[in-house]
Length: 279
Image 1 (cartoon, rainbow, N blue to C red):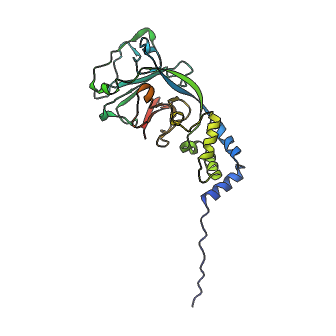
Image 2: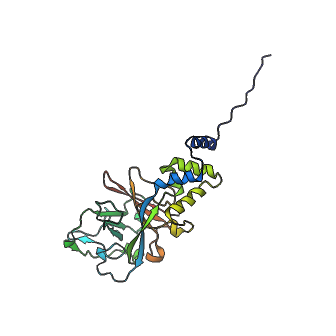
Image 3: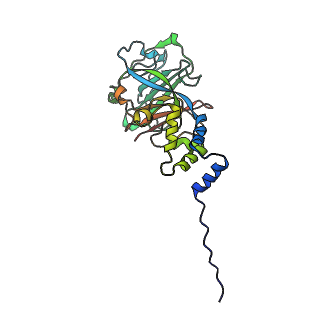
């Protein structure tokens, strides 16, 4: 009879064991190390704050939600390629402190409220971000809002003037691995049961904000990092431009089920990318 030798298969090395060894080699073992990894990621941003206003006079020259959009002589109201008019949602003027790229002097957002055209991504046709790289305020014109049955649904959008507050921004937990794999791995090693816990504490400390309420997690914001509702979907080659929250109590705006719209900017081709996510 032959002699058979049975060998136990060597168990695969645990992912956490491997990552812990790699981090230890790099001298990354403590929550203080995690904070030092996260600190360089902090970015300046602007919180966009809508405030209800009654006087529409001159609203076309203000940063606003609702109201009267800015036009110059010879322009017409935006519509889809097949002729459906788009609803004016908001505009933001770049006063040098708005966080917008220097070449964008004014950004306007239009959207089709008709369900047939409801847009969720760039390829959909029911949205438009209109960019002015130069403003000719000597030729400002008022273009009357077209008669359109599809506008009725959002005709109750409250006119709000926009103000801006400087804030600090960090990626959400779902996105941190895109910016620092070591920070993500170390957070997992420090607390395997709740890997996000230490990162969220550090995020709150460094941004001086609490994230226990949706009103702090999901805000209208220019610059910084997006706060994703359904996971990171950043378009390739683009930088985050701004996000517009469902400001229902103030503006009556609602993106699906308490969602957000996100805009990204490709510097090379100056193209705007659009994403809508909702719960």
